[in-house]
Length: 116
Ligand SMILES: [Zn+2]
Image 1 (cartoon, rainbow, N blue to C red):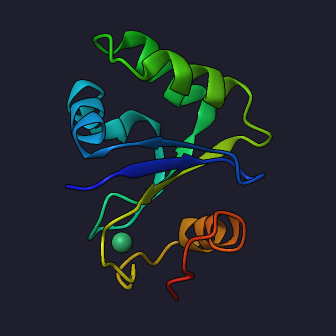
Image 2 (cartoon, rainbow, N blue to C red):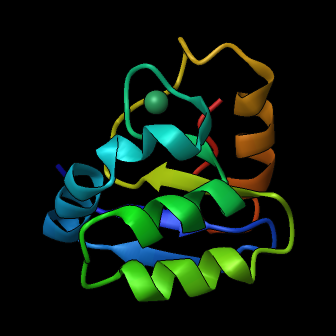
Image 3 (cartoon, rainbow, N blue to C red):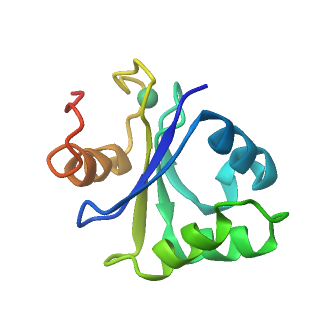
């Protein structure tokens, strides 16, 4: 399991390395409670910023939780975008409108390859 990047609509990022990502997902119920839309085949997803703050404040303390709460509090829009940085996934089975929003937010700004 590789790194995860939390990206906001302005392209600001908080990146978790592999072990941090695994422990965060484990301590926060896979972030399901904050997930608006998600790829079925990897960990990339659209997150509701407010729900993410609530979730991280409830979750057992994670070393990066404080930083992520601050990041989510400062988010310029209602959503944050989680990028499964090392997944070789083309998100083909991710078919709801969240996928388009995620691509718009993530691909041009974060320097990540657009994966149609
Ligand atoms: Zn995917």
